[in-house]
Image (cartoon, rainbow, N blue to C red; front, side, top):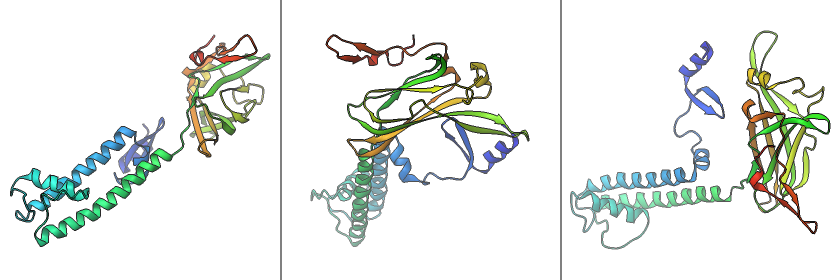
Length: 290
């Protein structure tokens, strides 16, 4: 790590963004909390919500205990009684066995009920946002190949729509991302566009073979596996389109580092012709090479 990176590390947290460390970022656990909760894995999301629920009840149980006679039928000094009374109050259950009887307990119950209403609204909103958010089930081949196609060297990879619906007006973009040195000796990350042979499909239903012809104008012209690895190069693929079911834009992306780019081989043929003119796509061979 160079001196500038070390200084940045000292000014703030180091955060991983894809394969790049983002240093010098001043942030707290509450920064962009809504986005964090939306992007957590579903198991972690429910874990956070459950932990917050238990923590709120634990705090209110301790506050109720400050008035030993404030809750009817709650045994003074028995934390569990106050904890479960807090659960009933926060959830507006109203079993009736325990109830606030002092002014302090009634005020505290009023505050807790208000927080319970807010908690329900926030939790329901977050859960709805996660469920209603459109997601793409687009899979890319694990490896890209560079081989001769129609007499010319060509970069080839493929994508498939794992849902049985249509993606309308689908577009794909290819980028060669690599480290370069400027004339002044500064190192930077450069993005060079790779023009796909067919960059747009009005109807993406099953599979799509994405190709880029490596001619004299291509940023990949004259490159080898070793030269790409030396510059820490990778190929970034981005596909987006309109999901006809959700009527929303979906997107998917894939990155191919040098060790996932195979030279001189072909993607396996997954299309089989059956008698009667029918065709079968064998997804079991989707990632295979010939």
